[in-house]
Length: 304
Image 1 (tube, helix red, strand yellow):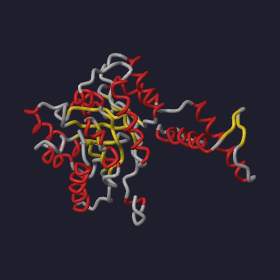
Image 2 (cartoon, rainbow, N blue to C red):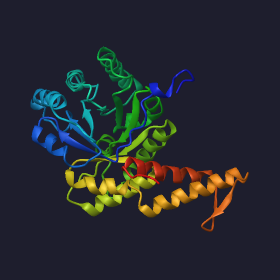
Image 3 (spheres, rainbow, N blue to C red):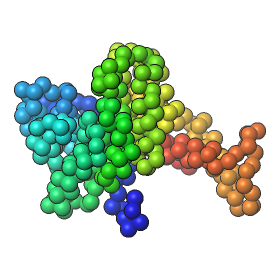
Image 4 (cartoon, rainbow, N blue to C red):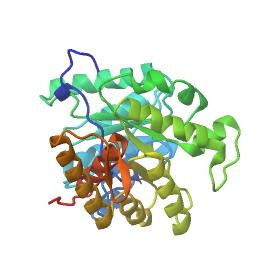
């Protein structure tokens, strides 16, 4: 962030736990998604739509944005990569005052972000929308994208999240996917590190076996431990597990609140490091407690 840029001019990190893909050419599924209680719906124009259905999907998304009421659910659209001839028509069909964000796949360079951001800025200005009302999420799913994470994460103030895409990355580097994910662990770590270094949200890759609840839970818990703030979903039955995992328990919330109160009292007394529940407390533990409370607010939990 430059010293002359105000916080109002910067796209703030998104706070969505589960982000559910819905094919852009299926109006029935899009309407159904509105009643599922998911934090964000991604209407898809990329992998979820066959090439001969792209025009139908564009029209469907435009009409959905015009006609449907998006309540608590954030409304996102994934367009095709800027390396294809499809992205401009995709973007034009998706731009709407109701749109919360564009999801950009296979981002490999900062220029990819800037190109899309410039067109969104024109739309916002033409329609009297606040600057950066529409944010950008960049999917990192190629070797080049991972290598260029530093320039991508700092590319544009409209960028609000980095998204990790394990399946495409594995294909790009010739890796074999495993339940433990060791073949993509470096990239998964790099995405969350660069996101946090630039105050961006970090969204984890989808779990592709949507009938396997135990595997989804294990992978989502791993993502949470790594610092991810949310996870992509490809089926409605994945929403509950993802959103519950990213929601702190009442016990976690209460402990975080007690810790912050104790810290404030110690600060007022002029003390630095102090003991809490038998352990010495320093600022990293305070920041962890603040993160828990922030996650609680995202989940709609009222803090006392």
